[in-house]
Image (tube, rainbow, N blue to C red; front, side, top):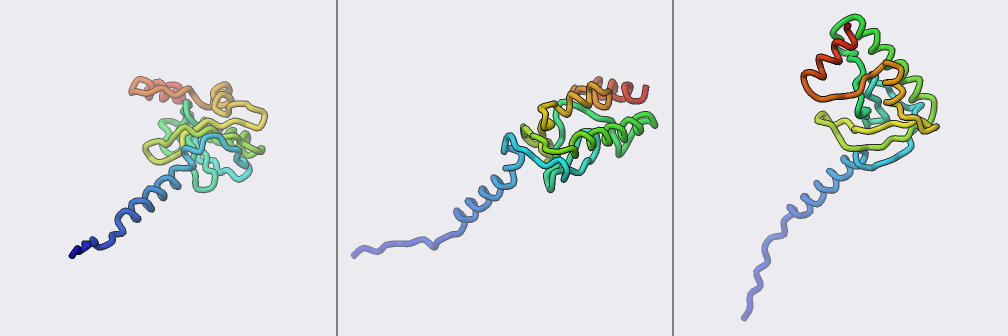
Amino acid sequence: MRFAFAAPRSNIPTMRRAFLYLCLLLALPAWAGEEMLDGRTAVIIDGDTVAFGHERVRIINIEAPGISEPDCEREEIFALRSRQRLAELITAGPVRIERTGRDTIGRTLGRLFLEDGRDVAAILVAEGLAVTWYEGPEAKESRRRHWCG
């Protein structure tokens, strides 16, 4: 006589699978690659960060002056100017995004291009409203000197 032992069915594999699908779904906006977005719906956070719906996008390779905690009055003025210029550029129409990943606080990292193909970051840097991003304490001090003199 044979007895078949059937272990109680567990929902753990199903739960794991559901969790993985949820993670993939949440990560999709950051890894979806290239996409056209309606710039008219964008919310401009500061000179290098834009929100499209629930997705916050940090423009890579540039640093705009800080709005929330400026080091000096001049930086605050440039922060407002860079945010205004970014708004003018982005909200004029369609924007192409090239997503490259996420940063440590969950924002999508990417490049933004206008309908005519111009790189938004390059425009801001050329107009003196952002600087090229470099890592490290010396770079941070250099940015502070750039904005505050």
